[in-house]
Length: 79
Image (tube, rainbow, N blue to C red):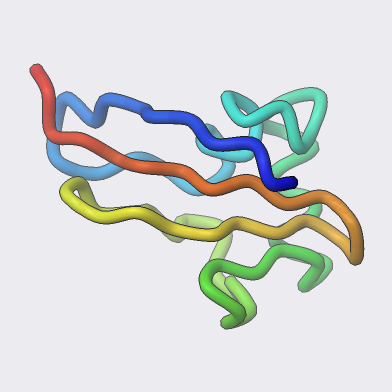
């Protein structure tokens, strides 16, 4: 079963590396950036190739790191 969490994006978007850290898919934001650069991160099945990738508020995403680490993340625009 996939863990689910909601994250607030005060400015309408959240950096993908921060989302990975908050979802406990990586140990730190730095590790998140490394995984993105290595091509190990997918959002809704699409590879995230840009280290500055961000998730827009108001949607739910399935985030994957490597082969086995998944989380369903809802990004809300709460301030």
